Amino acid sequence: MKPVLVALLIGAASSACADIVVPVRTIRAKEIIAAGDLDLKSGDLPGAVSEPLALIGQEARVALYPGRPVRPGDVGPPALVERNEITTLVFLQGGLHIVAEGRALGRGAAGEMVRAMNLSSRTTVTGRIQADGSIEVQ
Image (cartoon, rainbow, N blue to C red; front, side, top):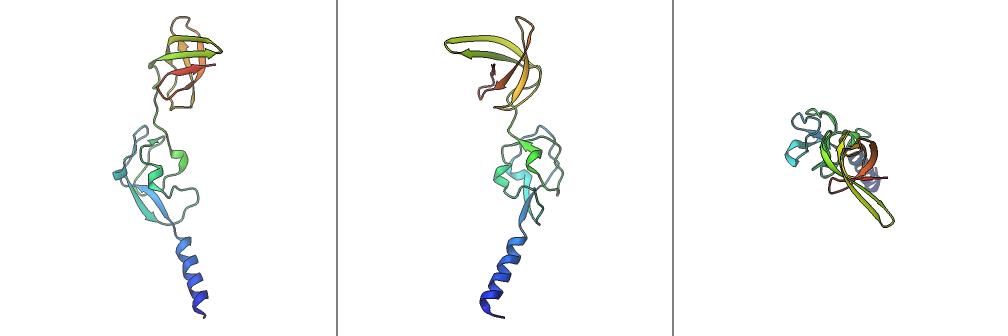
């Protein structure tokens, strides 16, 4: 065989076997993932996370078990608002700015939609969670 062809075959074989990220311990749902919780395992599983940095600081959405591959849907950004938490409801439209106290009816991270109850009027509204933990209502 020619040296160039051998090098191409070796390169193709090494790129076919990628690393996947697996937990080293059981990570429960709602736990924040730390660098020490993860390890790389050789193998190529379509849909599995292959970069540990993509998982560090994320929150487990489901229980993650040692040695099993982590999929992107298994993790997400950490929740800022917990269910039943008292939070600030903000309504902005034009020059109008209304602030009220509310109770979150679900939990979620920044940018996610969540329902909340206005504690003054007892009405249920839907809004987007902001980076500061407040809920911007439409």
